Amino acid sequence: MTAPLPYLKMNGLGNDFVVLDARDKKIALSRQEVIGISDRAKGIGCDQLIIIENDGTQGVDVFMRIYNAEGGEVDACGNATRCIAALVGGETGKDAVTIRTNAGIIATRIDGDLVTADMGVPRFAWDQIPLAEPFADTTGIELQVGPIDAPVLHTPSVVNVGNPHAIFWVDDLEAHDLAKFGPMLENHPLFPERANITIAQVLSDESIRVKVWERGAGLTLACGTAACATAVAAARKGLTGRKVTIELPGGPLDIEWRASDDRILMTGPWALDGEGVVPAALLGENAA
Image (tube, rainbow, N blue to C red; front, side, top):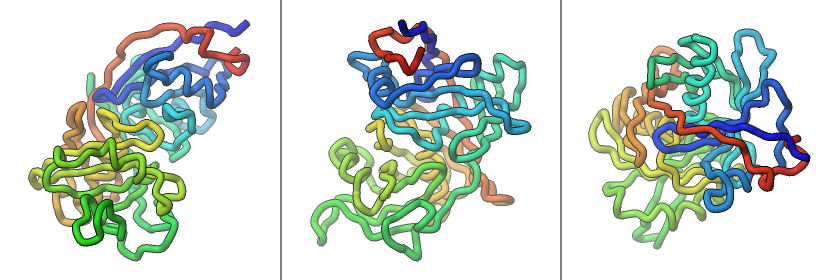
């Protein structure tokens, strides 16, 4: 018999998570179990499933394991980082929580409903993103959608901020159907680890509107790493300054690409939506 498995439901700007706590009991889910829990029709439903684990690293509060809704493990999730920081901060009374992910150690600062996460230093080299072939300039690479002489989308900026990202710059966000192009671009041969795909419309030196097709999750209301990637890419191209508000469908995130050390600071809200127990029908023996 599978033991009861409690969960929390959390979100950052509508980017939602099922959070499982493995600090007292090991939780090992199969790919199919992750898919089943994440399924919005038959499961609990989420963009990502998060497992909190103990971490023996000095100065680190918890380890955060991240699975996309399609069942694959990924390295980073900015919105989930802020949610878990708030959760651990509430447990411990700390206003600064340190979280380790597969992408590295992330320091956070908690101020009520807002959490700032230090998302680290972006990587721009083609083999760090990674791309399948060399590009000397990753502020805009050769990739397009549509006819050669009149492409619909073209010349994306690419960057790794824990996950690979491609950002296409557009004049009108609503003129493009990202749900149509997203799956093809995510799985384009140029991205050996697939990629998160963003379309971005620069509104001013301090504001950008975006829509995001998230690798392994599809269209999302918000994606923290995509917001970071867009802000950095815009600053590199001279489209904005280093402090910018990224307007996502779920709401705004404030991003600062700090000039002193090139680290990305992301600030935004978090929310606890509820709690429950994962239905036994969604679990196999791995979760016992």
